[in-house]
Amino acid sequence: MGLALNASTRSAARTALVLALLLLALSACSLINRNADGSQLGHETVLAEQGVLTCSSQCRERGQCGTAGDQTVVLGGLVQPRTSEHDLLLPANSPVTILSSQAYTVRQRLDQTEFPINFYVVSTQDNTKAGWVAGWCLAAP
Picture 1 (cartoon, rainbow, N blue to C red):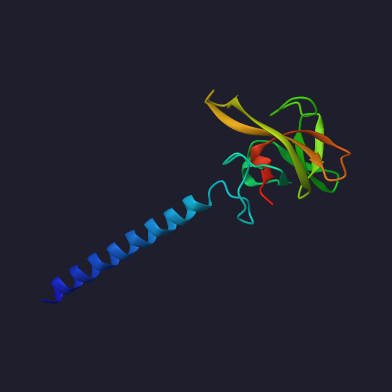
Picture 2 (picture 1 turned 30 degrees about the vertical axis):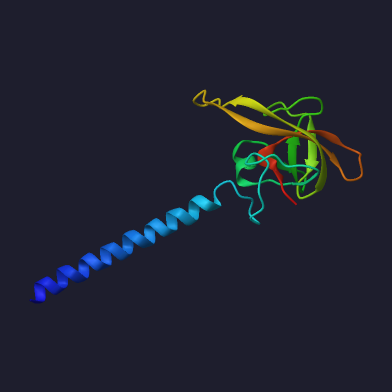
């Protein structure tokens, strides 16, 4: 009788562990592609009118933001979307006006996988800088 109880207890513990891991996995999946503060990023959905430049994990992992001096910046393109050879630096955590958006197909260098990404033409609030940024680096306000 004692062995049956132990086997039953172990089975219940395994079931509880599996359910806990499943819940953890589902929670993690819901957080993927979210900015640290939980706001939606521009590669997930088309943003309109206003946004905030952000050095999200997706933006950082793809080399689209970094630091210049002591300031975190989002990298972009003055006249066209860029994922390399950037020619525009915009301060991260800055509100911007979204002037337009367009989906482009990009190719990952490592494995040549192609996928669509939204790029945005944005302007700083003081209208001193404007250019293209990747949706990974733009969050809903």
